[in-house]
Image 1 (cartoon, rainbow, N blue to C red):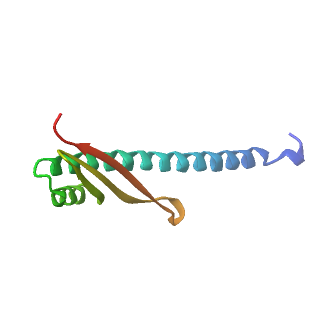
Image 2: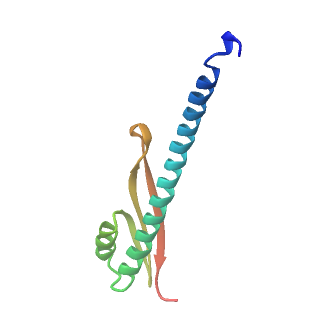
Image 3: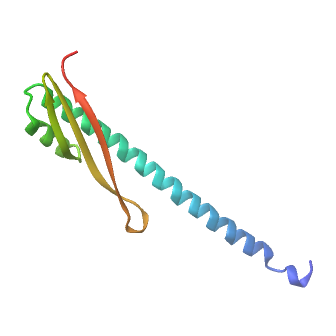
Length: 108
């Protein structure tokens, strides 16, 4: 081994580990967002179903809150109820995004 090449494997290993760490943290953020989106979607479905029976948006607000979301809007259209719920998701480096979902419920 030549003297000027000494330690090159260590530098490459550290660089590879840094790239792997960045990729892992990026994937973790994507997974967190996907899970939050699924949870908010489920909260929207449940809030719409809760409001559809009595046609009361108060039930939708309580159900959304019980499922970790906030009721953004609730509209009654005849026999249908349409709700929009959301929640804040904290990402890396203090950034937050708002995850929202809507759902509609009523008779078939």
